Amino acid sequence: MRILLTGTNGYIGMRILPILLASGNDIICCVRDRNRLSIDEETRKKVSILEIDFLQTPDPSKLPKNIDVAYYLIHSMSSSTSDFDIKEEVSAKNFNTYVAKTDIEQVIYLSGIANEKNLSKHLWSRKNVEEILYQGDYDLTVLRSGIIVGSGSSSFEIIRDLCEKLPVMITPKWVNTKTQPIAIRDVLNFMTGVLKNKHCYNRSFDISGPDVLTYKEMLYQYARIRGIKLFIVTLPIMTPRLSSYWLYFVTSTSYKLALNLVDSMKIPVIANDKSLEKILQLHPMNYKKALELAFIKIEQNQVVSSWKDSMISGRFNQNIQKYITIPKRGCFKDRKTIRVAHPQKALDKIWAIGGDTGWYYGNWMWKIRGYVDKLFGGVGLRRGRTHSDKIFSGDALDFWRVLVADKENKRLLLFAEMRVPGEAWLEFGIDENNILHQTATFRPKGIWGRLYWYSMVPFHYFIFGGMIRQIGRPK
Image (spheres, rainbow, N blue to C red):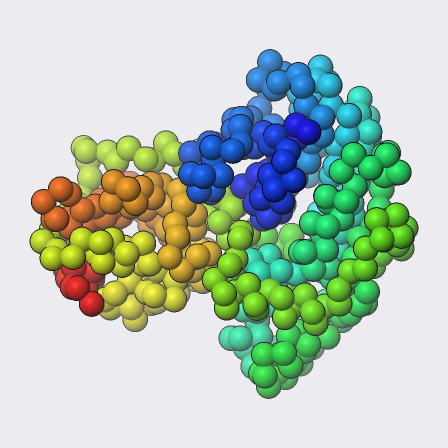
């Protein structure tokens, strides 16, 4: 079966890809930029990669005719607080244009439960996309999901951040809103179960776990599983904007995503329809089991994907690959080199940098820089990294974005997503003479950019000098 997988780089796309491949399907990964598809070389050889931006004018000739099924996993909620609904509408209409001349039989769309009369902008947009897709010349299957719980999911990571960092919470009143969470494993079972299932053609289904919980109850259950003492005080006076700032500063979420999430968290998300469970003979797990499985994956370092690796978790929505060539003119550079006795050990240290490992020297200064960045609307350090020892181009790495992760040629190139008056790169490489090269490049914007660089020179002297020495040490 030939399957078009849109949104391959997203949290769900990265999870369902290996499942579809394991079933012997021919997969076309549809992405905006093939260079930041976060899959290993072995998987890359098994798929076809197609570059399409569904927000741009359609060119149907890009799409092969012989497609059987498509998964529509395109969402724009985190890219904007004002016009994401317009973007989602445009994407859906352009998708219909693209597939109109193909042999496609079925489209599977993952949406959100929208059973209330008064919907948030986010849920209304998902429902609007559903209506547009129903106009396409194919059989549509819509899966309306509750909030998804799994290692790396935005919902799980937000709950994790809140409980692990705030033993006493002063929360907005939306923590009393009822919702019906579902485990990522069950979402994937539903998504693969409806594949080419004619009983599911031209139908919309709610999918959820068995538990109806308030957000407060979800937080308390998490705390009990983790052995954390948690106290929650609810204040009805917190406005949506204040609630958004609260989520933004405490968790790893971006402000745009926080604002849209708060808007949706006021709306109950409860499933009305359980018919798909009977059709597929599936029995979703409860919330407690979903949390336990998420931590098993984390403890075993088997987190397949994280929402934080999506481009929407950072500051740049455009093609970040345009930054892959470091400019030579108009830049300040901090170059350091050191001979390493054990190049493989040094390379392993480079590949483990950031996240829980830290930056090898002056971590407290890196943390302060992260707090300052968060204060001024940046991403801060809370994104961490998805894998402890693997890096792919396009991954988030604290407040950096990975541009090049070429372990064979011993090169790692990072681009800064922190708030700076300019553009910044950090590059590591080991040459054939076992010389470790570490280069920080900064292209300033205006006088403030130059003042910023000169003010940071004393810190760079200690931070970058200490970092390369620690990476070069054999232990």
